Length: 192
Image (tube, rainbow, N blue to C red; front, side, top):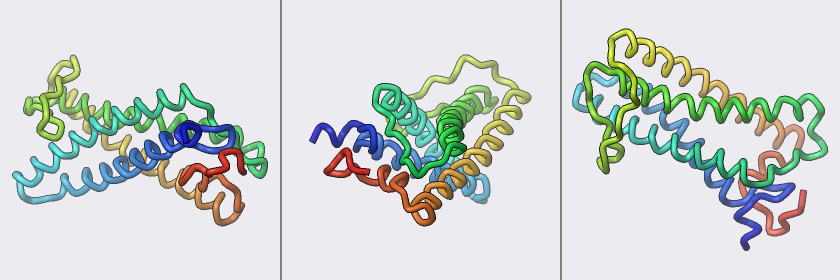
């Protein structure tokens, strides 16, 4: 059973799988929530949605840091033999970009609320007050971080869509194990 928690040379273990799909769900949900919260007419509802968005942003940041630490401390499964040379070179770059966006996006949101002239505290899931980053408050800084957060969100969701399309290509067109090994570890952990 412990072998199913950690990665093997051919498959991801449960820890990596759960973190992957949890982060994916929160990342996509955050994009949808961010889109909705900026378009609701009720200020009270918008405020509550923004607080929820900040809560999930801090959760996402923590999970991504955990996921990166887990990846650095575990075996990374080799790509199946069916994966070509170009994809073998591009895959690590795409994964690095995904991690970078998953870190940069919540950090830019944290920077945004830290420099905001409104000085509204962030209270993740109403549990505690998250301290602001040590950044100077100003309208220009708030404008910069608002734009950065917006551009990172759209670029990040584009990268997620590309990642999703590549996974579907592997599963339905190439018929290899790239997608299935991120869905469940095999009881035969060395099976391809």
